[in-house]
Image: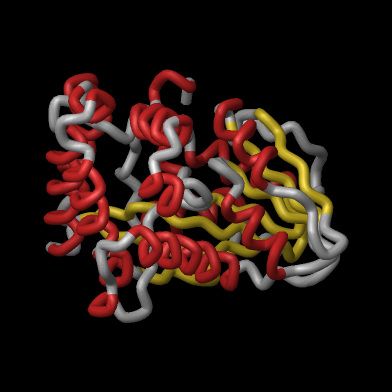
Length: 284
């Protein structure tokens, strides 16, 4: 995906340059949804959202069974939040963050410095054409980014190739119900992409598709957690954040498209038509 086709990152980077305190707190480290063990405790405060985003990272990393002296690749690493979290909580890790957008990597490199005998590096490249040799990593992570990739199949092949035997791929994704699947085709249409504040998104992979994809590429599906109830407060926070931006030039350029899309995602989540999954796959 090109740098110019990510309106939400354009907005975030602009607000970070302006030192917007809300955006700095909520999206300055992680750029993904939040996870609340008890959604009833969620607030619309910036700090609460930041903590929930950190917790989603921890929930996903737990599925990967990361241990000391492991080599970790985080694709679609954004501002380096997952790398930063692992760097702070583990030791003796070799951590690589990969992203196609150099602007995101520049922020990640500025924010994340090695701790606890860890090695940290960032690489600009395509997740579907990984610039690494075979059997390089113990873990490959893809936190809320695979729907942007041009091909899930090609990414799975690349992840399988670069993982060591026994290594794991852990990812999060928006997974449609079978009932909603026919409607996801419209999400890739040119007309919808003009409306889509989040850029190109392919949300047409059901859990059944993932099982077939795992089998076709040689992976074993170990974990499939539907955490939709735990991420729903994200939408309430986004509505508050976008509401606070009303009347500002950076938001007006979107003509309310972001508000409408968040409202749609809220409805789809509540109706369990578009679910949020944590998935873990193992290379035998």
